[in-house]
Image (cartoon, rainbow, N blue to C red; front, side, top):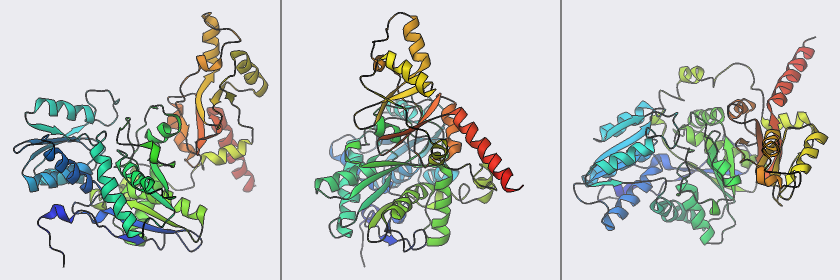
Length: 464
């Protein structure tokens, strides 16, 4: 029987457990890396221990100091455990969408918790990251952990999570790794370990719709984030702990998919995990169906469901937030594109304003993305951009369209729910559908209206 000098040495060496009901025999085999079995119940135990030990070695944190961090809850819990063992004070800031269980658990370790508003811009003084920075600046002897940007975060997963999975799979003998992208540390660290071994294993990141990582991966630009309910995955800022160079693919998932799958993991597989585990396993199951038998996938179960008893595990909470509505959803974005059945309209990087006008007229569209040589959208030109450029005399018909183009603001994954388009239309004129770095189509509000009208007519016709 293993004996440990303290609870910190019990972090890691979590098992890989086969999923038997979420995927069937027609799919690839899926093994879940059960980070729920770490001492405080999440993968963040790994980074908390590593970051604090590195800070001590470098003299950044000294006896009597205070650990300060912005957190969605799990990192705070893990840091609170480390602080309790090592004798540090700690102060954590977190958004008000986080569960009361997380807040109560952090306080039980003796941490001070400061709750901030969720729906504020990333540059607001009230944002939980900026609040933590202010507290660290004002507190003598404070060490600001900075999990979103520190290289220590990636290191923890490279030499802990990544190496561990490598050893458990006989030197990385599996096809796809699937992990959530919150700070980005997990997929970045695991990705770095596997890439350093020249492994063919595909690294797939999972991002909730409303977060910024999917958009950043495909365009390199920061979109306007939207509020989403699932916790512990996704982010509304650019994280330097997110190394896209070692990630092969990003996929999006919505709140409903995340919560429904997480509930299934608890009730069908006996895995007591949180909503972000539902996010990652939803994508893993999707890939398992695509690959079929004879392939293997490893997916991260990020944290324990002990944090979510009053949230996604509650039928009342699920109904209150529209995740248990009777009847079918409108469908997925790719179904809308298929119903529209029209060519993808785009321009190359060398297109002129005159060419853009001709394109608008020929196809009856009001905007068109600009794509690079690999069909990856890099910008978009609207009729209003052309009008403004010509009106003010700063452009001619021979001016490059790229010179008046705007950043793409509304990227969406083809398997996203059509309902997710509503949030995009609140900020952008159109939604740009991208998969595997390629432009699949552009959706406007009238497209959604026509889709809904046709669906209603079809339903009525079937009852006549």
